[in-house]
Image (cartoon, rainbow, N blue to C red):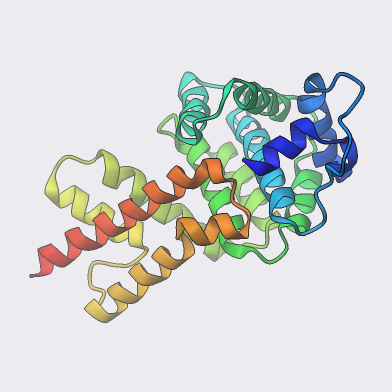
Length: 258
């Protein structure tokens, strides 16, 4: 939680300017009394703490933006944001800031493209971290059980801003849809079909290719590696749960083929 301590207890020197700096100023300003504490509270470019604060800020603001994409914010979408907050075990201050960020993202005129441009620039080649962010954002759109054309169009634009091709986006969307069905399906046949989708492979894939896909996903979503690249430590449980789902899908397919 070192990034949070610096954000709240440090000086405004950690602010990086741009739309993300503005969002931080709006949502964190209430915790400053006008006389910031002394010392160097800065978060230098590329530092883990800086990337963590950027990831946190962008994630909750974009969750609000996506929730409003179809013109209304549903209870399911709000519940999805609360679910992420619960998984992160946010304290009362962090929770208030996350809610404020979510509300900022819902506002008309939210500078989404500018925010994403700065996010991409600050994250700088941490591809797995960018994908984790995009997956959380897409999951918000799936929260109400329906991905309408407006939401999909907005998600495609976000993915494009982050450097994803249409094919890469479609593949990611298919895996996340499979992930949701894998968790919720009761019948063994449907769960098996969802397991293949979660791993991003077809049912006729060879055992070698299946294992290759599994290892690739496990490497991309390894919690410790993601935290080392700048995933806020509070999101460790989210990454851990994801790898558990990948492993469960792989084991289900392996057992079915025996």
